[in-house]
Each structure stands twice: as C-alpha cells, then as structure tokens.
Image (cartoon, rainbow, N blue to C red):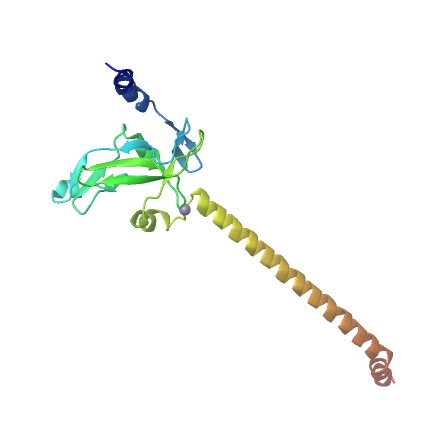
Length: 201
Ligand SMILES: [Zn+2]
C-alpha cells in the first residue's frame, strides 16, 4: 500500500468521526431558543440536516397536520420537523442569513448549509421563505437582526425628523413672537394707547 492510499484509508476512517463532531449547540436567542455555532464553520459547509417524518399531502390525515416546523419539499411531500431530535428546528429565520436550506425533493432531504463563514458564538440562520414570512412573521413583525437594525434606523430617522420639525416650528414661533411683540409695542405706543385713552375719556 502506497503512503497516499494509506492516508486515504486513514481519512476514510477519521472523517466520519470529524464530520459527526457537532459545530452547533442550542442556546438562548433574542426570540427564544436558537442554534449557535460552537466552532468556525466555513462557507459552503453542511451544518445539520433538517429531518422528521415525511408527510404525504395526498393522505388526508397527514395533510391535516399543522405546526410551525413543517418544511415543504414540493407540492406533495413535507417534512414534519417538530420531532425533538431535529435540532435544526431551533434555527431561526433571518432576512440576511448566514446559512441556507439545501432542499433535495427527490431524496426528500433538507440540509442546512453555511453561505458565509460563521464564527463560534454566531447564531445560525436561514431564510424561511416568502410563504412563511407572510404567514407568521409579517403579522408580528420580523425580529431578525437585519429587520431590527432596519427598524432601529427608521426610528432614529423618524426621531431626527421630528427634532428637525420641532426646531423649525420653535424657530418660526420665536420669529413670530418677536414680530408680534414688536407690533404690540408699536400699538401700545401709538394707536392702541390713544384709543384706550379716548375710550376712557
Ligand atoms: Zn427579518
């Protein structure tokens, strides 16, 4: 056996052990629980499989199952990811994610794969898609970091705009105030006082 094939055999023996080493853990996120990287995860790496019983939409009692962990593979097949062992169900949605779902309808499998380099401690996110977003997130407002940042920015802009309007209004009022007192003074000095004087007389 050449040394290169020996290396290959060793790699073959070692690799499953390495790839089964978890790169994630369940932890507290802003919106409840989430999945977090415990090791650096390179862009393109498969992180975890999203798994559970496969539901057939043509079978009424399977089609009736409803929970928020359903992952639709296509018009017919759906993964029910609500099973406890499916840790991928903890992965939260993000509009600007660091992972994506690699959907394989033919194999009826879904893998979550890194689309950016992920650092230890980073929360792992993927985009749940428009249907989920419309049904579950839009009504309550998306809490993902990207949306929170956007909201924060909008709030800051609105605050700045209000401050500007307030300052402008105050400046106008001040100007109007000085004008009206100037007018009043004039009135008091001449016509107004005169009128009052005449009325008294
Ligand atoms: Zn969002």
